[in-house]
Image 1 (cartoon, rainbow, N blue to C red):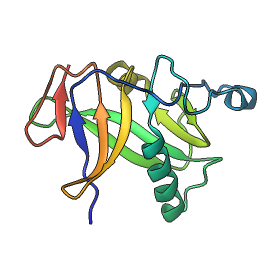
Image 2 (tube, rainbow, N blue to C red; image 1 turned 120 degrees about the vertical axis):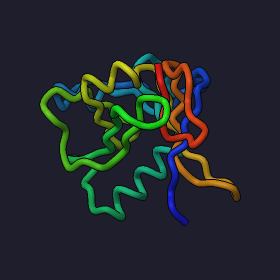
Image 3 (tube, one colour; image 1 turned 180 degrees about the vertical axis):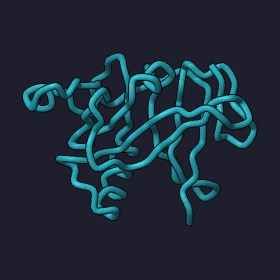
Length: 148
């Protein structure tokens, strides 16, 4: 079964983690654990578990690499979400830590993803990550693009 990305345009609810700027190792160590809520980016426990499994399959080290979330121009509604693994953060990335899973967001994408919750859904009908983004004003019928 292949994964599919689904986008929803409803306000983020029930976050499970808060961002930590990884300027230093101490900042990562002090990052809140799932269950806390703060601004920035949030990832649910279901998504954290799925990311951890996928990173292990891809051979991505949690200490060095992580999940890269981004926004690109294109798609039916003007912008598309990007999700992939990266072996290390880039110089200007915002780095979030969620229970041992790191998420990288470039500065341009952060403008569109700030306040977003990443969730993972697994039902009989579909399986994949859901971007619950309060900044999205409209999404397309295929569920792969949005506008803000």
